[in-house]
Image 1 (cartoon, one colour):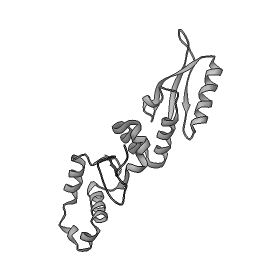
Image 2 (tube, helix red, strand yellow; image 1 turned 90 degrees about the horizontal axis):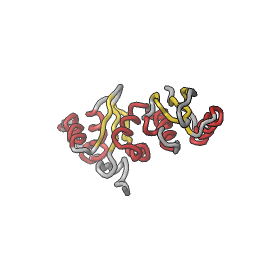
Image 3 (cartoon, helix red, strand yellow; image 1 turned 90 degrees about the vertical axis):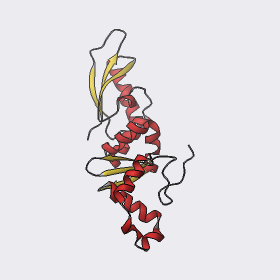
Image 4 (cartoon, one colour; image 1 turned 180 degrees about the vertical axis):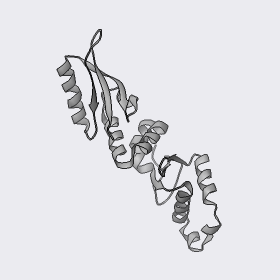
Length: 176
């Protein structure tokens, strides 16, 4: 998957310079260098982003590329759908906390609820009490109560919201 921005050279009136820039795999310094190179090459003071591919437009508006690079790197590691979903729901905080709140990829909501239940209530699980639990209802309740966010595409991506979902084995209460 490519992560691209369509930039135009911003002059006082208008510029006929424009180009898609591929940012895939670049770090902050490389993007800053690319940005400055294009400005020098086109003889403009700034670039304006007019369109993007696979990147939220608001990440490209300012020239602080750290959130943009974080977004791209997380997409490469976890998949675009999951990262874009978290960014749409939680913004920059979602990017900063992504690896901490990401609880995993599951075949279904009930698979997550079952794994979570068995981890959280290990003593009860050993007594086979889990066979009496409706895991689909548990997963639905966790989501309806705002304890978790889920994003479904090929699988179900599960995120524990900072300050709400608590699992002793996943993460502790954040200092937000």
